Length: 255
Ligand code: BTN
Image (cartoon, rainbow, N blue to C red; front, side, top):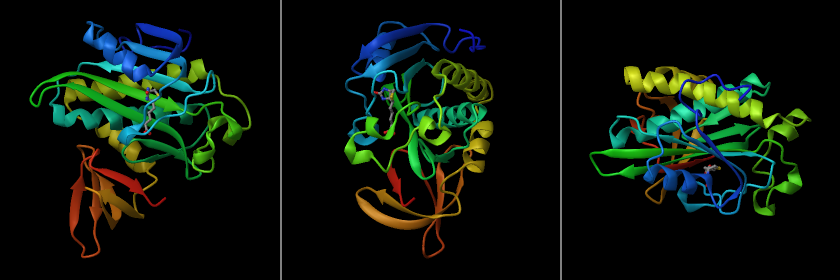
């Protein structure tokens, strides 16, 4: 509570020692009438979920594993915008505690080329109506190298490894939720995510670089040139043709 200055995000916080996944719990709560802004936090996840069906390692008390329930009045096709808002809010929060990271579109935060945070936005609703969103945020805060599963050592890092000291997780959670509320309100009130996009572009790990994209199972090379106002990655292929990619369609490697 000490660090939280929000009006509605995190006004209700469900805190657990152990959960299978904060996203699963948040979806269960949202289905049972839990409202916009409710936050679920766990010290440990036994079945942490990542994008594209991957798992997410979530050891006890070492990280920030949390999910936010949201019920914005936006089109289901705009759900990816909330991921950009979350990435920007996390970037800003981590920056405020003294670590300069980069945002790897659409949903990763990296530090020295290694992953330090991932965002997983899940949606419930129909084609034309959004019921609710759950935005899951996983931050490798205080892990040491040996806390990571062997397969991802070298690919993942933590704030503690980079800072050489532990981060105060409560403070970071408060800062992230404060930033999230501010950036999310722009979406709700002005139907714009310009402030978030600005952060994502200025601190992008991809823009200006050649990237490999997996588009519908096919690998392609292109140059990342910008992020659109809608949150799509704008790329230019070898022939000079420019196109936009919606998050969810691709997996970006090549960093
Ligand atoms: C990714 O990079 O693939 C996204 C990882 C998202 C992990 C977080 S941890 C809190 C929330 N609960 C989950 O099960 N996953 C997300």
